[in-house]
Image 1: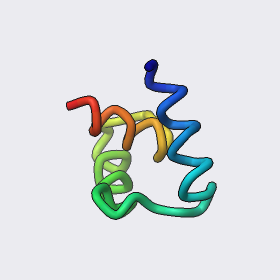
Image 2: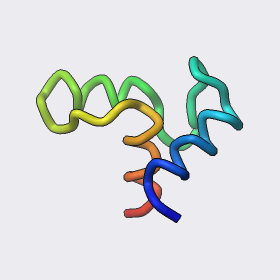
Image 3: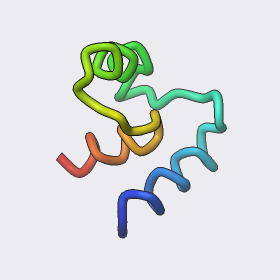
Image 4: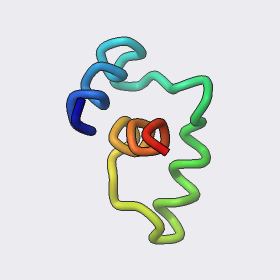
Length: 51
């Protein structure tokens, strides 16, 4: 399964404004602020899940 499909599935499960219990949005925001990622939240979660 590709990253975008996983991200879409997560968004469908948790909602647009939802959050994964394993990957807090605060961690994503930190990475965005530091320039470590340019991914959207759900794409970032999907990438983290892949390892």
